[in-house]
Each structure stands twice: as structure tokens, then as C-alpha cells.
Length: 198
Length: 198
Image (cartoon, rainbow over all chains, first blue to last red; front, side, top):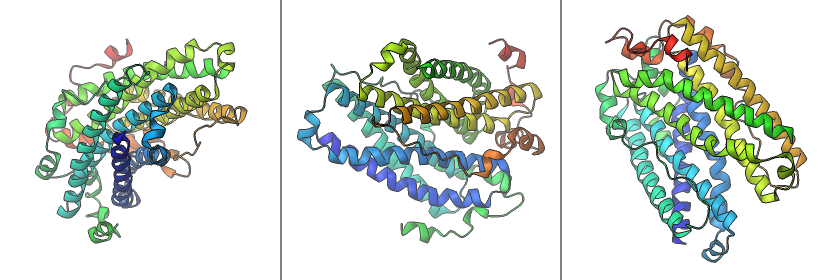
């Protein structure tokens, strides 16, 4: 199954993105001036940590599945694999939204373009995993597989260009609260250059 | 296994809470004056919808497992069950944070107490599922089970009384943005009474 190596590449890439995203967000938590800002970003990072823990198991498992091995999976193993992949499909979707939400925090153009680049690729990866799930579910139609229900369709919010919307808005959520007391804590101890190198 | 009926009760309760939470949040999305507020709450609701979809499968499955049936699960089935329960442990943890974040939105005392009540029970349910997971993992130590790593420990943010912190703060996140243009859109078409009846 060539899909397995595609999935492996996607999950490997998103794992790298998680680290990059964390490097951007952690300084905001550290510099937060109020409990709400701290809770908000802490919450997002915790969800990404949970996703990373799952990927840490799934990526090596996908790697270990040669084409031959994959064909020999029992129905139950295959069903489990489809379910795990489906969960990471949602994980990619939610990560895209975490990236979009972060666009409303950062003011400097380089970080914003970095976030928006990860958002664009994450969206493509999400759509690709969705296609792969549909194709695998069809191919293994006799195996119990997860419902492919999606909650992201028909919502206007997903058609919004958040890079543009966040630039038009004078202030983002956390910045509204924080910048009242402190001008730019988000960049404390952090340069775009230091992140780009990672 | 009496734990199964305890888990069933917990997941059944949280499913009801999801609906109550959604009734509170949807009007905010509908009345949102900017893309960021809309995205923020849309994102939280989408995550809860994903959780609800998973619970819709897990709850009947737990119900179907009599004590006798549970003892006869294969190692693989048991491992899968433990993994599913563990995912919902994180789900409860994340939901508690969604409830805490919402405390920073609402100004009226009844809704705030309702949210804080759900938060307190959700936290207890989360701790209970954590205990059950530890006990089941120990009992079935020969079965592959998920890592019990937690990301919520050692974080000061979890020791904060967000009901108090959100009351002390003059404005919440969404309210900062929205109330600048419109005084109280969050309550549009919504009374506490109409929610309490649900």
C-alpha cells in the first residue's frame, strides 16, 4: 500500500511542525500577564502534546509496515489502523485551526508567514489523509472502519483567509489583553531566525 | 468489572454536558462580530463534536459489555478498549479546559456557576477515569496498554481558580473584542432559564 508511505511522510512532517509551533507558543505562555492568556495557550499546547504522543507510536508503526506486512494484517488490526489514522485526520484539522488562531496573536510578518505556510501545508495534508481514508475504507469495505463524518464542512469560517482577517483586525485575542500592560512579550527571548533554523 | 459501569456513567454524564455546553457556545458563534471570535468558539465546538462522535460509539460498547463478556475479551480487544478509554481521559481533561476558558466569556452569574459546576464534576470524572486506567493497566499488565503519561501535572495553571480569576478580570477574551462594537451579543436570544430546562 503506497498510501502507508504517504501517511508516514505526512505524520512525520506534522510532528516537525508541532515542535516549530511549540517554540513559537511557549514564550507567550511564559510571558503571559494574566491567567486567561496562560490557560488559552497552555490548552492549545497540551492538545498538541497529546497529538505528538500519539504520533510517536503511529509513525514507527507505519514505518514497520512493509507493503507485504500490511496486506497480512488481520481485520481487527486493519480496523484499528484505520481508526488511528482517522483520529490523526482530526488532529491535522484541529492543528490547522490552532495555527489559524495563532495568526491573531503574532504581529511580525515573518512569524505570520511561517504560521500561514504551516497552515497551508497542514490543510493539504489533512485533505490528503481524508482522501486516503476514503480510499482505504472503500478497499477494505468488509472491515469495520470509523465513520468518515466531518464537522468542517458547510462552515463559512473555513473559507476565511485568516492571514488577511488577522492583519485587518487591529489586535488579536491575547494581544488585546497582554499588550495593554506589556508591549510585545510574545517575542521575549525569541527571534524568527532562531526558529527558522530548526 | 464494576469499573465498566462507572465509566459508562461518566461518559454518559459528559455527553449530556457537551450538549449543555454547545447550547451556551453556539449563540456566541452566531452573534460573533469578527472572524477571530467565530473561529475560536467554532474550533472548541468542533473538538467537542469530535468527542461526542467517539462517545456515541464507546458508550453503547461499554453498555454491551457485561462483567462476563468483559472477562472474555481477547488481549487485542482489551488493549483497544484501554486505548479508547485513555483517549476519553484526555477528552475529559480538554473539556475541563474548554469550560474554564468559557468562564472568561460569560458575565452573568448563573451561567458562570453552571459552567463552574460542570468544570468541577468534569475534573472529578477525569481523575476517576485516570484511577480506573491505572488500575486496569495494572490488572492487565500483560496486555499492551497506552502510556499513562499526563501533560497536566506540574502546571500551575491547573491550580488556578478560573471562576475567581475570570471574575477579577474586567473583560474576557471574546468579550474584549465583541463588546467594543456590541454590548452583550453573547446573550442574544438566550436566557439562562432556556438552558437550564435542557
